[in-house]
Length: 451
Ligand code: SF4
Image (cartoon, rainbow, N blue to C red):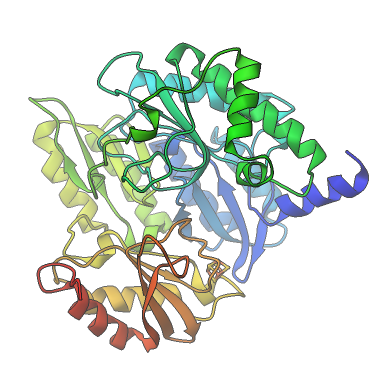
């Protein structure tokens, strides 16, 4: 790679925050801490709370890849924050492995899936070749769980064809999501569970070889746009010396996950421990909340807190007799699991308080909108974004408010075929009060209108 290429990679990375690289925002530096599968011990949670007060402005975001972001890092505090986070055991396995810690699994994944995903994550962090991947390059190892974020697009995904059978073959795809609906893009191929790791490294190796000839590109979708999916399958079959197709693969669909299954008490059979989940307002915590969450985690479960790609928190392994008490404690802290409260699912970017590109104060507008719609049944997930970049969500949500000016938004409803990336325009340039009224009329009377 020549020096011009290196500077291009550097520029591309510099826009994306990491543990060692604080991207600059209106409210200060942003430090993104990439967690292994969203896991945080209670001690680490307390440490993050302290570090965010000591080195930042006390705002702690949960991201849509189940990571945390410490915001408002003041100039000169960067090294102190990095040392504090490394001291908490939140660093990567190798110095250059931070950016590529992008393997997502369901918070309910089995031990087998966790071990497989850990092998991939370790390989990404320790291979000098894979360390050159874009900080946005991401993988999803699906286990077919009932609760999983399957609509989040990934560079590469694997999903078991028959999750109920041990050692099932995996379907796989690139630049997209496992197919759930008839109209979704079908899987690209099929691979045995024994060779699934080999398939992943073969795809990464092919991408990196292609990327050397195309240094401006950073994602698998760019490679697919260049060579096409059929050619990728052909190259993989040559490299792995196996067929990757099956007659019924185009018809295979993943079982749809349970909507909002990450909220409330997630029941299991018998007297098994329960999982308890709730959503902080707009996926954002402060040091006080994080300390109390750590205490709840110590009191009611195994000392491990899980953050989720829905920007919520989950407490695994809560004894059945303590599940309601645990949920009540989360509610007392201001977290929500009640779906009649829009805050249970609402997400937003930082808005004008934290971002120079924002046209509106999405965080405070979101809180107002949630209050106006509180108690109305059937309000779907709402996403407020300060501009069209949509940092808080990589895909269209059922309702998206895109800021047009201070306190004003265009309202979009999700539609499979656009016309916009957010769906179909419901109304333009509306205030929060007008938006609440329109959304309430559209969805509030027992279900979405199909007019
Ligand atoms: S979506 Fe736009 S306004 Fe919101 S944080 Fe991203 S760049 Fe800023």
